[in-house]
Image (tube, rainbow, N blue to C red; front, top):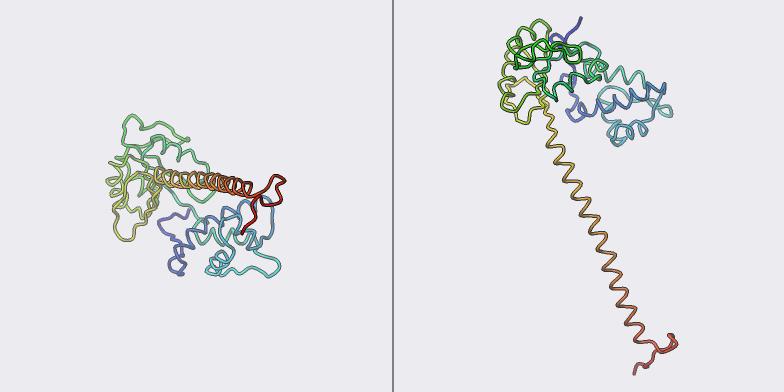
Length: 259
């Protein structure tokens, strides 16, 4: 069985920009949905809309993969699914360890999307001795004392940290020392890692704060939009009063002719 320890994605060696790499999973998700509906081909405009990007950017991204589509036909959905999956390294098995099996860690363990996307949860690890042996998502939790052995035995190169912030850096260092070279960090802290180790941070509180910012801005725009018509209405009313004062009893002839 191929593992992430001996096979690495070719994106860096092929010079694909990081921004493009970050969009490839968006394209893959949209393409997978089309494939499940047995859609054979898709235009760049349709796929771009489904992925939430503009079509020019999509075509540029696909040019790095050597995929240009067919004029008047579009892109072959199944071939693009394979091409992007291969580029992302998803055509092989990637064993993953999740460290920290609290509420978040347990939720991640129960996520059904890992297996369908080329990831296998090889082990669940927690520092609490009371958790040892308890099954979560059908996998028995193991103590952190076993961390290094598990990584070596399972050939793990991707670690997920879902511990409290205070424990995250120590866990990170143990993962790296044992050979893990990619880390997905859910702990609310910034990790320090050596060169050659990739870290992706997922901070739910930051994402919520960004959403709160946008909600506040939208509320402000709505309030401003309500004030402007009210002010305009007051101005129109004043103008109407002035016009009425300048009109005669019949409303069509000025009561006082200008000199």
